Image (tube, rainbow, N blue to C red):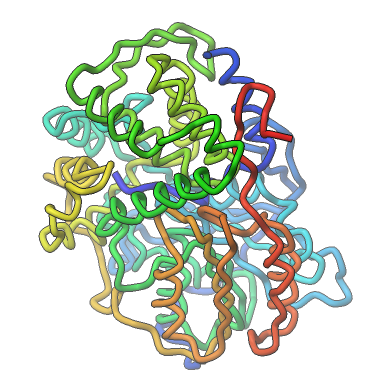
Length: 499
């Protein structure tokens, strides 16, 4: 399965404290015509944090659209829309649409989790949240997968069984839940809200949506922010094993350069390789408390589970900080702390991602590239081909979806773009953003040192995004404030980082 993103699934600094607790316990032209611009009535509502940590006020409504855009008289679905009004009603500019990642995360869930990061931009922009069709409150395409599906890939035969059961139970026809259809929904919401032009922020997979919207409706876009950038020509899975390997090597190199980390965990890379080999020969069966319910949970901790844990922990600096300690404990025979983190991150993904929508996108837009992937290169990485094999099994029998012929074509636009990358991003590395940046004549690409996937909460990034949107150009934008950003220090023991 593709790495969700996400990032769009960023873990803030408080997640590090929660992880330590769990560790201790475990030891131009407008483009194609949009749908009829009927008004979108809104009423007061509250957006709940996905983990129940609070809520925020908004104005919510639904827009009814055809499930199949080519059959407007056929089955319809309701799209959930939420609007958070600009704080300064005297200086309100164009609306800012937030596009979440995954694929499969709802924009309302993403924003409710990280609203503070967008507060500077919200001063002068209405924030618009459209749950992409198949996610959240927009006819969510959910699958009854086991709780560890995303983090410990089952055998291909089991994946085929789960995929077939998923398709039988879907609430919609998945061929109409792709990026090419989603951008039509986005423009229908823009029109229904009466906005002549909009700006967009996209993270991870959401950057694909933003770029394709810009391709289809160039005259409707004032500026875009792309965070954890997927260039149009990239597949979500084609380079994931190599990108993940690169990020892990950066983490090991940073540990070697850190006196406290190197002293506590010497020769970490070679010990990780030995652990992988050992778990490949002799998986370990563990029973530990489920981090969500506290009920006993049995897990077969093998090389696949190890790879899943490392991949997800390496997404963000706050969890990468735990990685040397967790790998050291596992190499000494104590897998429970690492396995507990695997379950914790897996539960987070299960709650956030609509796996049916994820598959609808991945099987149509990314799986076709699998045949050209060099499997010899995959074999040299810690992830190997397990994700690729899992996607191939998942997509057997999945209907081909609607995809525009130019979805993966390069962009060429004068619309201003701010592109943000984490130096150690394991899924959308800086080289991806550099490729995407070639399509923007007015752009600034910022690489943040030591960071992983998604920069919207790092240091001064919220203010930088707001300044860019205010200026409406990347020319002359001063991003030096992000030069001081650094990865969180490594956790040496249960007391936390070294002093």
